[in-house]
Image (cartoon, rainbow, N blue to C red; front, top):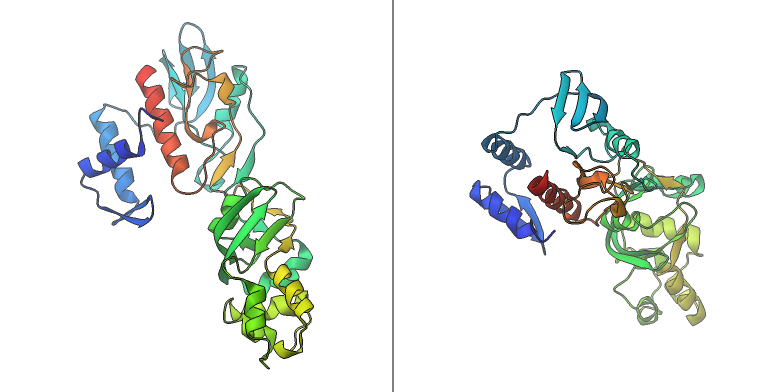
Length: 316
């Protein structure tokens, strides 16, 4: 990573005259479109003399003194072979298991694969309750086991999404409950006590801090909704606890169709950390998402692809 850092990539962007802005700390976006980045790579490839063959299908790979690659374009030979085949995410874009298959062919271990940075799907009973809230979002803190993330969560027609949920999906496993703190920045009990003389229904009070449609649905399902002045201090404490410890056990995820990345891949112990070369197959390199390296949201996975590709490119 140190040989091609985010600052190196920024230098490349600026060299090509691409304008960008910082949306949040460390999150950079093109002022134009992502097509500018594609154009950048095309220009860099052209300057380096790279020949791009679209629609080229690899049928087989053999290794003698050199790699012999049989394709629908004919047979090709090379001293080195760099596999940058990506993961299984977004199969509509052509994602396949080809990279993992090549690794296994040469005796490399591939760790278990699963979709990650992916929306979670409700169980039927929760979908019946909350499916009608599709499009509603709120700021929350979500946790699973010892891992917690702050950020927006978004109700979808099938479950939960949004940055905090996508981050959590990196660590969530089937059957595990997730805990949602619906009001992470407030002392909810203190709020209730300050409003304890109010005659408004508690769902209307909460609608000042949560989306009204969600507040109404949640109160109807999780507590006995009544005017605020009819609750005891004990009930206020119980409701505050429920609001900050709402538990859901998802049915599963939206799968590779909606996953931003693939968790798992070629075991890093099988590769040189300096060159990305396979220890069991000299001249064979693996880079990017096909390797068992997965980052959180924020461009980390893109940077890993560029950094690992640069490392392999120095030696291949």
